[in-house]
Image (cartoon, rainbow, N blue to C red; front, top):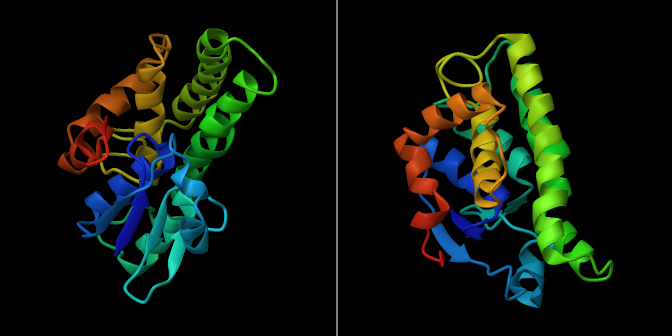
Length: 214
């Protein structure tokens, strides 16, 4: 398999963790977002959306959208499972994943931040501090509340085995720390994150350990 990735991309980070948890080998192709390589014609032929990651299988088929691709991998390489078989537990893992991937991450995506700093002319420091910090605080409040209310967590978001929920949680907390957001008020999120960081698969997928890290 071929993975088109950028070391700091949250969605790429998710997919790297999932691949590592399943022990699947791949060759990395680094796509620099700062250099706008994701908008190059050659890459757009692979992913017309012009985003990372993209995973190309041995038949030349390109899979985009990290969570959809993770579910595909879970169906084609079911061990270890990243989604439980029980329908309610499966809903729960998807719900946690979507709180992060659909409600928190898009608001602080690099495209949004660049648009605020560019056409809207908002001071870059304010965007990084106030905009980013606001949506992290609101999103993590909702996430912490949902995890607490459901009471399904153990060492990880669902019991004691990592799932797609944890795969999504790790990059989001990493980014919150990178932007110096105060997440001290979310002890459960921080505890789950700390447990994930102990996993060799998560360590291997860490941005700092990627070949394009700078």
